[in-house]
Length: 241
Image 1 (cartoon, helix red, strand yellow):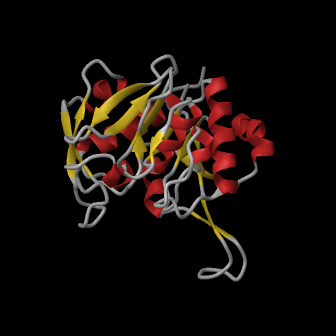
Image 2: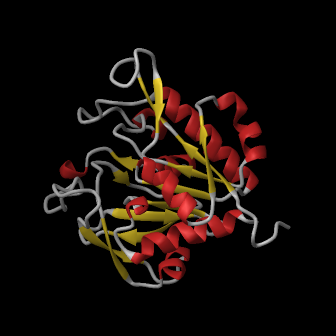
Image 3: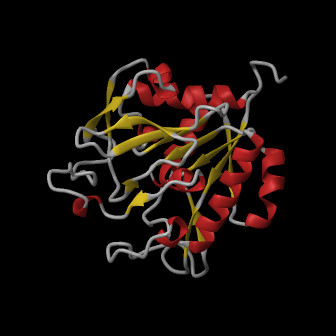
């Protein structure tokens, strides 16, 4: 077993953009605060280029994986639905890779933290489904794509008693930011809900049988509430083995 002082290596998934903007050729990107949040919690973040053929090799190198979010949607065909007209951007190469590495991590029981779209992808990997467009789900839903800055709170979430997430944050309710139009619909068979928005939208899931398998719909890398720092600390601690 690794010593408590071991600095675990955290594989961080990347976004991918076509040629244009930053480069005349396709390019990878990751927001700085994802990496800084891992470093701040005591982990060593490394980027994971998209190649599903080497998912096993990546798992040999890392102690945990962080599945990041992005301005795109998981292809609804992956959870047995036709595409809603709000789903305008999918990134097949990224999604294929993230599903491969997430499923490999689940088999090996390597700690996983999924954030925003990463939580949604984790749920699909666990066999669950997604709401494709929250505003059309029902009347009275919150503004889950908050109008204010992402480094500010958008709404509260209720943390479900008895869950791993509740043990981590030590609170029944926390304030979170919100930047999504999709959400978890049906949780995968092995998963459970650990957080809910006031309008009933699922804001977090976990797989209790795993060492650490947690997804949250908000962006804790912005450290909007004390619970965000606690979540990263718990994740990195689990990655120490």
